[in-house]
Image 1: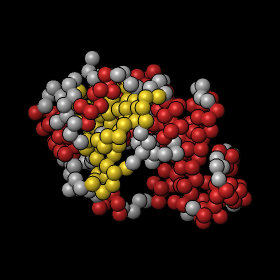
Image 2: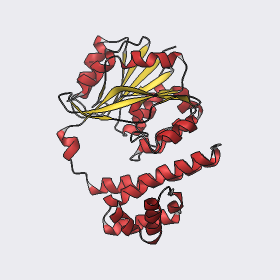
Image 3: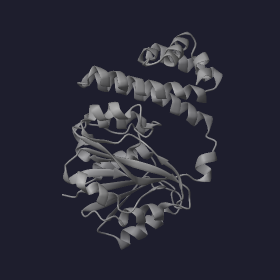
Length: 315
């Protein structure tokens, strides 16, 4: 059986695709396949990846599909993967030489999820930031989530994990198609399904920060969709809780994790949409999810109950 499937969703990534693909080809782990999935690109991505496929037919499998977004493309990759484990690499980014060799020891231990770390880099490969996070030995998924949820800013990024494929298949877990923040909606739930997970102090993923990605102005309609989609993910999380046997602590932390992220989205809305969104939050009684561990949090929760707009001024 193939050990690992590297899933690379591709959409108009011609400028950075070569570096991404070469970083996956150069890895030392045997029995690795690279699934390059062209999600309806309109640039030269197809020509680039077809060249690599021709030169590396034993490693690279190329798929071409109509543009349906990264969530659907990742789901497609999972369905085609032959590996016991899967690794997601976005086509603008790349992985460091030796990462898979470093993770091999944990694959051999049959651990469900292996978490590593990420560096933000510029177009020259210079490190802009080494993103820190919790490090711990093997534990179950609930214990891991409770350690990560308040101490790791990249908990919901699929690119800093190696997952057993069966976690997705046996639990019928997929990225929700046609939504924004699909990672936020899914990855915490995958973690909770793991029987074993380890988080290591290895920086293996390079997240490219271009001038465009740092300064781009997003269309407000997309911003509005992102904000509303977080509520869809919240409702899906509640359904997940209703069907799973989580501890009281995990349930509380999971609700808090989603609620904190949703409240932060309020700052992105215009006044006419803010009022509507606040009502949706109150309808779900999400304010009750905010945990109070100190006086400052108590004051914020109290103000939030009275007026969310005042709460925002305290952030």
